Image (cartoon, rainbow, N blue to C red; front, side, top):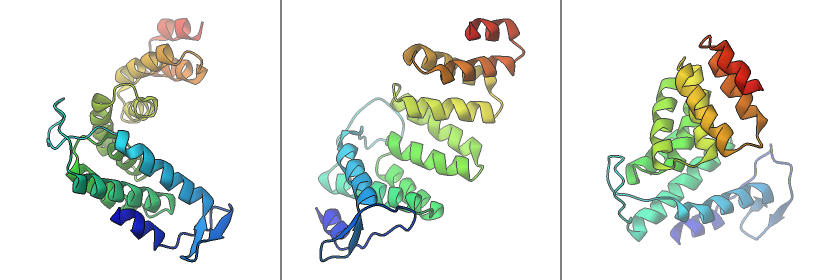
Length: 196
């Protein structure tokens, strides 16, 4: 609850977002940014929580204080990322991982920052962990496949794109990326089969 009071006392205005703003007597609010942060805050409790530093499958609930702090850090990190403050955003997402080392969403957000900063090896390690925690998340798997390819691991990239192609058959771009990963391995016959 403290965090939401903190949000209400903050003034949000991002010049890049030319959306409806309104005044609540507490400052000008940007509807787009507020809506995004609200969605994140509402979706965060559905994330998996664990106190273990390892990535074991054992689940332990966080205390209410830890949950609030985790949510606060995640929303702060998201806000900083949106406004282009990547160093501050990374700091907040790292704090999330100290509170909950199995927080896949924080791993994903931190990995996207590392990828932007050309720290692809760090991003790849985070996404390996995130996809072990949440095996079905399409966006985590997509970033993992992309990072495998950027780091020259085309065989692994092809495997992930193949699975994405099977799981999301309506998305033709996954087939193209799968075939491209095969081409980088000189597996021309297999790539042609994917194109067919």
